[in-house]
Length: 157
Image (cartoon, rainbow, N blue to C red):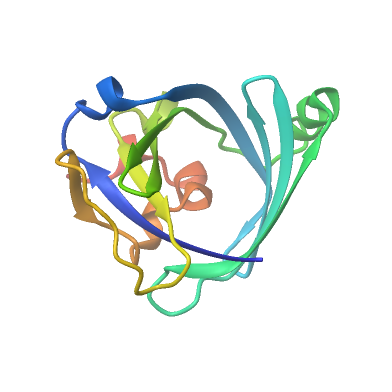
């Protein structure tokens, strides 16, 4: 149940032409402290609850547990979440043997587009698409839990 992923900024919208799925996502946090985040998510017409532990050094891996829950329960739990909801569209793009998830944010995080790729080990190689930009894996500002409290639109450029 350890998740290993790397995060990148996205430098062009070319990924949209390569996407094989896209889903609207709304999510909130019942707990957004770094030691443990508890997230409620609605992805399309499905609900999920996710618990994540603190990131290991470098931000690439951490404990993650996720379970699907009924949509009506997810909608009710979203009402209990801390201030600051995340709204985004997630695109999935195949690159080599990996799937990149690209999130295009809306609302208070509009203008931010990030890509993640899940790996089997921290040293696993992967093909980098042309639209992939700067790596931000070790920058906690790009965690959704952080963005829910410190929206991208409020960052000083």
